[in-house]
Length: 61
Image 1 (cartoon, helix red, strand yellow):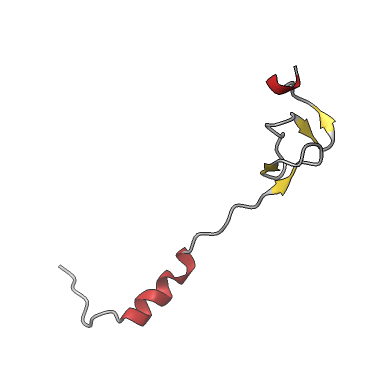
Image 2 (cartoon, one colour):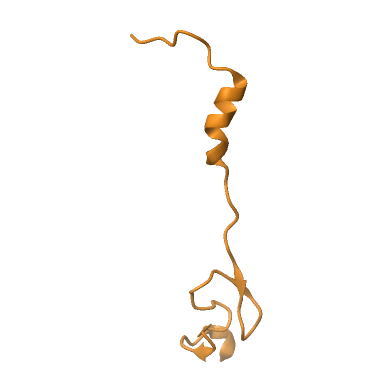
């Protein structure tokens, strides 16, 4: 079985893992109602996309 010849130092280990950090999800606000949504998606609050009503929502009734 292969065994490392030397111990991997804390610095070397942390440098290797430096690219594994989580990033925040990009969000935007709806132009119609101001709700926070993911970009390029229909707003779940008002049902609009790019300023046009595309989905009928329960709240609009």
